[in-house]
Image (tube, rainbow, N blue to C red):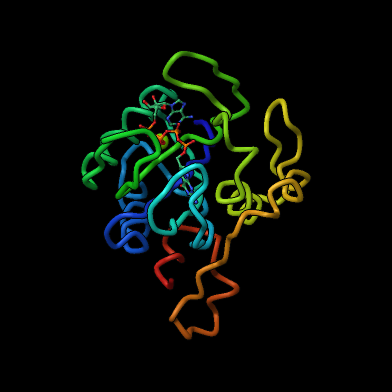
Length: 180
Ligand code: A4P
Ligand code: MG
């Protein structure tokens, strides 16, 4: 079993709903246990055009080797209608492997930790939300990198749910995330 962190992003269609559905889709995989999910964030596009993005991060445990996890990410992106007309094009769903255990991988089609993780508030902020002490191989504590991305616009999406337990529940598991 390996603990991995996935970054989810979308800015086409009903992006907010897509991210929620994608977390459910991940949780339904036989090979994956979702351990935690961050809040949803609305974020300014970075190095990209189009509408604001919605982003979140999921922490999971998986029996899948990293390349199988990447293939699963691509399959789920496809199921959610992902198209790739040009680099950084608006997308219905993007699933990136941010971290896979403590492994560092540098291959043509797979780089872990994700090469732009440390430059991006839309990945770092939700990552630190669900795991304040997380260490990024070769970069150190993620929390220490937040200052360097503080100029990037990112705001937590407020849930319409009035459940008084929501604050206590959010971020702890995919099931509890149904409250959002
Ligand atoms: N690939 C290599 N390493 C990985 C990895 N760790 N996880 C390869 C996932 N894929 C990885 O990915 C392109 C290729 O990267 C794949 O074939 C895979 O084998 P892609 O999903 O087709 O395209 P992408 O995600 O757009 O590419 P890339 O280069 O990862 O883009 P970024 O850097 O992730 O930027 N602004 C906001 N606010 N929110 C966003 O979510 N996303 C991007 C995409 C730009 N700006 C954004 C957001
Ligand atoms: Mg991607």
